[in-house]
Length: 402
Ligand code: ASP
Ligand code: MG
Image 1 (tube, rainbow, N blue to C red):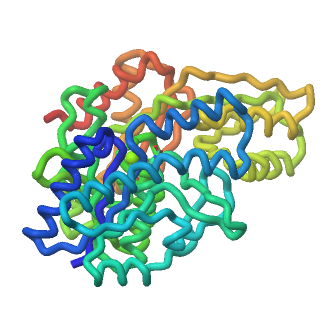
Image 2 (cartoon, rainbow, N blue to C red):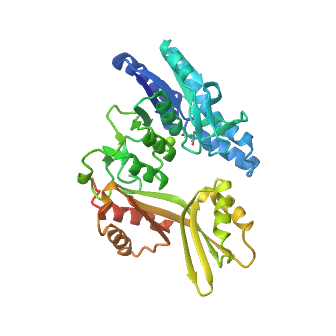
Image 3 (cartoon, rainbow, N blue to C red):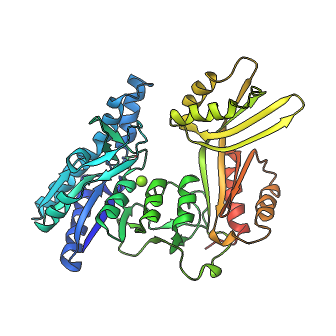
């Protein structure tokens, strides 16, 4: 059986770990008769190191050179992993995205996969050669190397599984499971056995770094179950699946999640033109700035607009905004912000969840700056120093302690 297995940066962080991963892969081939297709991230810390070199040399360069630089970490890890397999008598072939045919659009540093060729993978598998694919990268229509956004190797893995028609994708990482909250922030957090695609998608887009949001979106679209598990332990981790029959039994809230890198941008008064919002948000989208919570309110002195972006996108957002406003509009920036959210399919059709959420924060005197809700989540932007207290209180309020 073909199984796509993705190994994250920490799992491949040292040569010893790469050897241990190679042992585990061989064991699964021998004991379970699996035909693995491997996807690897760069060794831990490597992508950060590459980014920091770019920042020092040319902080604003987002030409194809930037993505090529970022993608280079995966070339090292797939080569080493293939060599570790060779050393154990297992044939393996490291493959960069352009060699395999992973085509993406041309959005720099945030490209999306458009198509993947799988013929050569099937051929390798038939010849008992283990393909070792570079995660995180692709090639656009102009033959530029592109990257899929931080954490994008997960998306490469799920896209491969989907293209191959597999119904499972294994993601090996340095944590044993998805938790009810980040255990570093909330010590009482406990592992979750199974979670729905929708919940995981919300968690990923609300700041959980466990999985790349787009990987979950793809998994849901092609119904590929993700098994997220530890590289260092044999036990099962968390299954990310489509909703089963027993949704009634689900707790109201499945997890508390947070994003400490939030910036709030406020504009006042905004230009009094009906086109303003359309133009502003189109310009931001064109720059690849992901705008999160947006609120607009009317006051006698004029229109107020507030929205949040990822702190990484702060500069790009400011530059773009400058082009859309005049001096009459004042920009105020709140940098030290965080978003805290509760997620759960069980909150659909439940009364009073928002009330409990606000009460938990109010009881700790935590001011809320922006709020947004959907069927299955409530999020609030708060000041970063309050994050730990907020997350712990919400976790307790919704009965998630282990
Ligand atoms: N190496 C890339 C990163 O650090 C991709 C990944 O790890 O998934 O973001
Ligand atoms: Mg990752």
